[in-house]
Length: 128
Image (cartoon, rainbow, N blue to C red):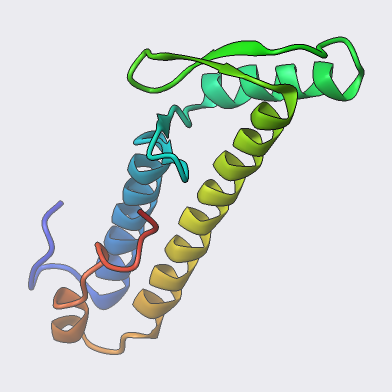
């Protein structure tokens, strides 16, 4: 469906909120870039694997350095603390993406005319 005069305001709002959901998923899945400018995978499988290792770290099963692969398939030797910090960074980045999407959706819901909504840019404000 393309936005236009054949859509009601409510239909256009729903269409835009679907676009926001897609943009959020794209931003999260594009990966998280840490303070060392390394981009890490942030897809469901990446999160599941890292969460599993962090659980093993918390249980004391994993105590030594581990090799973890970034989004560009480059191996990095990381301490348990590094891995837990990475997990926190990935989670915080995803949280920021969700907060941005919620802001966009609230802004979309606040529009009371189609023309203003058609000019609204959902591509601004996302975390980098």
